[in-house]
Each structure stands twice: as C-alpha cells, then as structure tokens.
Amino acid sequence: MKFYMSYWSRGYRQSNNMISSHTLDMHKLSVFLIKKHYGECHMITDSVCKDYFTNIGFDSISTELDCISHIKTHNWALGKLFAYKILSEQNIEFAHIDYDVFLWKPFPEHLLKSEVFVKCIATNSFNKYKLDIFNKCSANKHHIGNISKKDTAYNMGIFGGINIQFINEYANSAIQLTLDNKECFDEMATYSGYNVACLCEQYYLKVMSDKFGAKVKCLIEGMDPYKVEHEANLLGYTHLNSIKDDQIIKDELQLRMKEFGLK
Image (cartoon, rainbow, N blue to C red; front, side, top):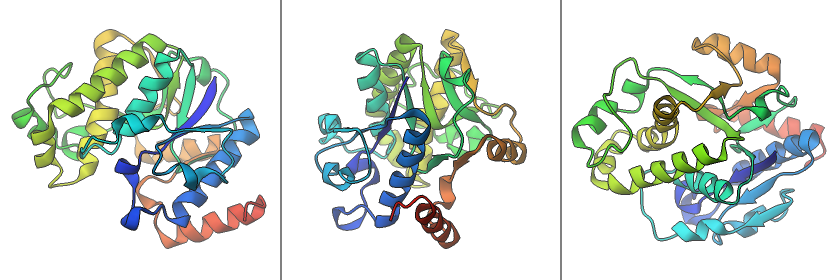
C-alpha cells in the first residue's frame, strides 16, 4: 500500500495563483505524520503547483494533473478523481489522504487490506448536495438511479483500497459524470461548489459501490456525527473539513508543527 496526496491548481488555487502558507503547513504536517507511520508519501499535482511542494517532504512529486489543465468545472474534486484514475491504471494499491487529515496514529491494520476504504458514512446527502436540483437538470446521470431523501454518501478524507478494477471504473465514471453535466453543475454551484464536488466524488462512490457490490470499509462505523468524531479522536484521526481556516485551528497547527520541529 502506497500513500498519496493530490492537489489540482484549478480545484484549489487561491488568489494571485498562490497557495497560502497555512495550506502548505497543513500539507507539511500531514505528510510528516504519514511518513512517521508508513515511511513514504507521494504527491500528484500539476506544473502550476509543483514548486510549492518541493520542500514539504514528499518522496516524489508528479505533474500528471497537467492532463486536465484545460478543464473548467465546479467540481474541485476532479483532481482527486484523476489521481484515483492514474493510480488505478498503474495497478497501484493506494491510500489517498486529504491535506487537512492528520494521522496521529496508524490506521487499524485491517483497513488497508479492504477492497475499498473511506472515513465514514456521510448523511443528509439529499439536502447537502442539492440532489433535487441534480435530479431535475442533469444531462446524464450515469449510474445514479432513483434519488431518495434517505440517500447517504461517504466521507472521503481518506480513500483507497485493493480492488483496483472497481476504483478505476468508479474514477472514470465519476470523471465522465462531471464532464457530461456542466450546465447542471453551473446551476448547482450557484448554491455552493461544495454540492458538485461532493456529489461527484462522495455520493457517486456510494452509488457505484452499492450497484456493483464493492465492499467499502469505513474507518469509523455508524452515522451519528458526534459519535463518529469521538471515535475518530480515539483512533488518532483528525479531519479538519470546513474548520481548517478557523484562527484557533491555525494557532493549533503552528503549535503542532513546532512540537515536531517542522518550522
């Protein structure tokens, strides 16, 4: 099992084509902890961003995401989907870690032997991802069938597995879902680009794994968000999600980096 992160400039790039120091610090701490437990971590990015990551600690940095430099989409997770596609086409069993995920402890050993693994089940997908709008305006739903208010998704702060064939099929299909629904996703993005990215990555993984019988293992079982976060803390797993830019979090990050001598 090899560990990877990815960063697509069109998905994450900030003002003036710059990546903030806070974002780079999150990468640095996340990579440090991955390497502490697993020895190596690699980056898949594009030429726009490569130089930002040269002093972060990655064992290798590729610019394979240059292949999507021409694509304009509200799906900021498209870079992740292409990373999954690239790795699965190379027949690599991988774990992909988001840059705002910190592994204070190694994963339970069984997790990395799973067909597919994620953090946990994500609830309230119908409302959070604006599935009602997608249902009305999508040009091609691909494997998405009947949409229900009870539908769930997967939190993919971590993602990977050993079922390379399924991961490849999922990634390719999710990419095509993105490309085929530009006008619909333009409408959805008037509410939030979050809707589009999570639908294409997190919701679509749930749809495809259910349809094709891929066994998805959650690091944390259950759907109660408070219990999930409590269990995550016990496992030594932190995913900042939407609070990553909070000043308290920024201050804590600096303390943690100082603790590990990363400044």
